[in-house]
Length: 191
Image 1 (cartoon, one colour):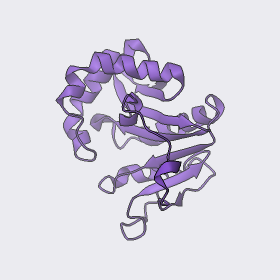
Image 2 (cartoon, one colour):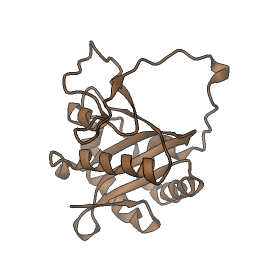
Image 3 (cartoon, helix red, strand yellow):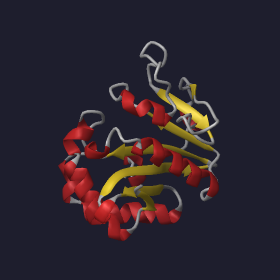
Image 4 (tube, helix red, strand yellow):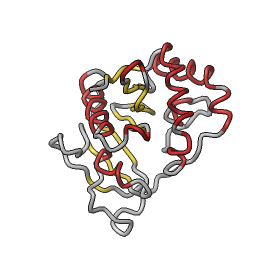
């Protein structure tokens, strides 16, 4: 089984290779990162490590044979015992349960190592294979959860956890109550 490792400086070449090899595959489900992501990746990787050091984000890579990155599992916007979970798995590794296992492992780390009590995950409607990993039931439809946004406490309902996900609707908030976001936050793009 591949190893889940905390992102480190030595992962930079393998992560860049992972992102390049899977660019078109990922673009089918989420917006493309753009050419600047790839040309300036060394600086981006350093910024991610800096944010991780400060504890505002926790980045992980699923590493297979010979150091190849098979997936990325990130906890971003860490604050007040809460974080957002984002992940992506290589096309060649899809369909083998690696996303579900990676999410399970990151959820365990979130609880035991990072002291998080609440995680938020999103799954694109165009990517139903990711729904179970994010806690979204396979029976979900666009009519039942138009945003495909699910929140769980502790661990997602991924088949191995005891906590069930529940659909949520974004609550309108007053602008003054919303925490300020900084444009310098490299973790907003999930690595």
